Length: 498
Image 1 (cartoon, one colour):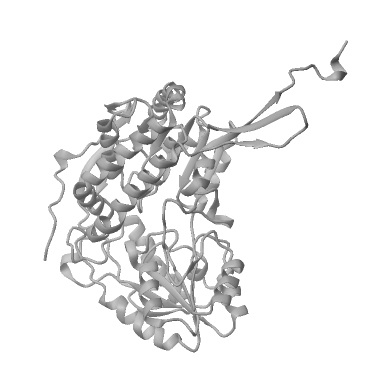
Image 2 (image 1 turned 90 degrees about the vertical axis):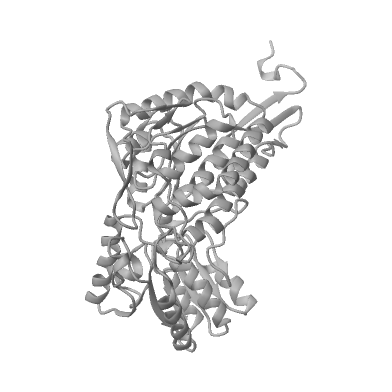
């Protein structure tokens, strides 16, 4: 089978990137980066702690005035150069991402790298499109509102799509004129460090982007606490999101959170079944189900449930598990041993509550997969109130329930506190728009699932967080409005006259 060449450890950047320099962590600590395919150590990266974050913030604060004053089209030009550099580096980045995350290289080549390039290009073009406004106020006065960068922003990137999320966060922040201190996940830091190399190569001023690899409870906590950071953008679990909100109170920094999800995916009796089956499988099994927007709750109309499940289970069992660097592999391992154990634990949770394992639910038997963090695509029939229907599993694990009426379907869909992604499959246009209005979620996909684009805002409601990635909304998230009043008659108001 065609297997791409792995990246040699000697090629990897493993130090911190602060103020345009590659430096060791002050305390000298290092973190093992594990290959999820076989459990081996890929490399060791520097472990940033609070004092390293402080240096990164100092560099970002020093660079902030110059970067904000740089003409917007020049900031955009550098982002466009970075997009070109990433595109030229696509083969290397795809192999690196597949090796570090377990994401099949075919998806890294076909989705992750192109989406990363597209995002940087979008915000490169957006940099000089940010406009203010003129407000109609009292006669004799001009009031205009301009958008200004926040200054230094802290960004904490998750482990599931590290390369893509780097572009989602860096793109709008830099386009809007901010400088950045970014902490990638300690589990999957390698593609972020590679992007830092490219940032250096294309000529970004020193201090504009700083990358600190470290643990969440040290480096991440310092980013959340730091009084010199004006905003934190965090993607990750709801529990950690709550901690960041509490930490932000010190200097009342702005916070944007993209947190967990428990996406309802509703299939109506008039759905085109083959399309719904394929789209639903992509919605839950792509990237081993490790996506906050995964369609992890299948809600099937009882008239088509049997037919749908026959096809869906058959497709799930046909998915090729294997080496992420093999271009034939359709599903790789989960990204870490700890997470692998967590996902497997939910199989027992489902069974303890009376759920029925329709397919999967175990480690694959193939000996060549025995060292990796693999789990078979898992389909569980469960009641709407069961834990596996309410808690985010974050793996190739989908629950199934059925409904009779539209009212029942929307009640099931809205029965969790999450509100990130959602989907529905129907040929009834009226129903589609009605459900899009009624579903409690930041995003709704109709006759598709997990579609994203840099121009479209991405984010949730409820315990899925607040604020938005991407689109013009993201530019607003990384700026603050300043209202300016001008007395156009240049006269002293009468009540001050002497």
